[in-house]
Image (tube, rainbow, N blue to C red; front, side):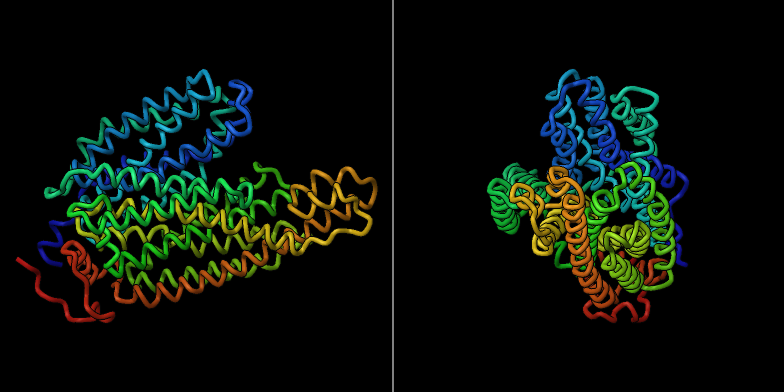
Length: 537
């Protein structure tokens, strides 16, 4: 190992800084799942209606997705640590306001502020980790810790939320953010070095407005279609978002200092890793929706029971994800990702066998295999993106990683929901003699079947329910088959488009990282096999 390699290694300060940065990362995902549990308590206290409850939950995720690009680029321009610290202050204030809200409107506004503040976390943390961990092997470990923090937040959110709601009032789930962000404010300046692009230009406010007008309507429209089906308003929202996205892209190409540097996509490692991460988020979002609905509507499990059943595969996902990251230090990351995607595809093949009589075990086995197969991507793709990105564009790259995940999940949920509904309507067989006032709603959705079947006495009502369960299971099977084909395609993409990337613990990885910092790429797929070149002085 060269002297330059030794000096580039991170010390105790950087590892403590990693811990401090992972805590707010985990907090942003804990918040999402914990709020679901508090809705009945909030509704009873503030009188929130059904629509208002949806906005209490959704506004946070909407604004995180909307502001990720802006916050990532703003960090590049004025300093990533500075943006993160300001975000932490706003998060503390908004958390206190949310905890002590006296009306639904006040709570929704507080949640909106939390979303804007939460958008500062992911892109700035990823960019800061890139600057703190120069050694490729250490950076891979740091990125794996970041991915683990996100997974643990999703897993522990319901657990932490349930404990707090059992001991305190609903506002306590918001106050748990205060000590975490205070720790960041106190320790961050000592453990986390500032970094920024010294040649950054001014922030283009029109591009900021366009990015919001593109992302927010797209995410909103997709979620509404997943929730209520195709309707005029969600379609208009998606069209507005899509048109704004086109205008946004055209403007970025024309600006000398764009809000989002589209040249990042010309790097084949970055573009391939982004595609893999986004498509995987799409698949996981859609599969999670269909599997959860099957467990709830067909198998009759409560949301709490579903959460408990999924704890074991979720923790397995964390373990296997980190194992995959270790393997990628010896084996090319593209091949590790390809094998993981093929394993996830096998899990989806298991889900094609679900039926009203297959039992809970089939769904859980399929989901477990999917979680385990997909988990390495959550650890490896952030490393591939950040290690191949020039330091001055790190915040922008971090925002792409996070925005791709948010958009992928929203699109996956919407598309899977629409596909499942279409299959259900085609597969539902109306039992003979079913009254028209029951047959209509029952043929539209399984929820409609449950709502109206009680109007038919005796075996006739049970027959309607049985037909609805069979039709819904068919929808799950078809969606799983399509998602399996997508995962096979992503496996091929990973094995071919990333085969030039050396194992993260190898000497070639250090060369590749240096090339990423210079904005250069190897000219052939086999360039990583070439003899090691002398270091630049």
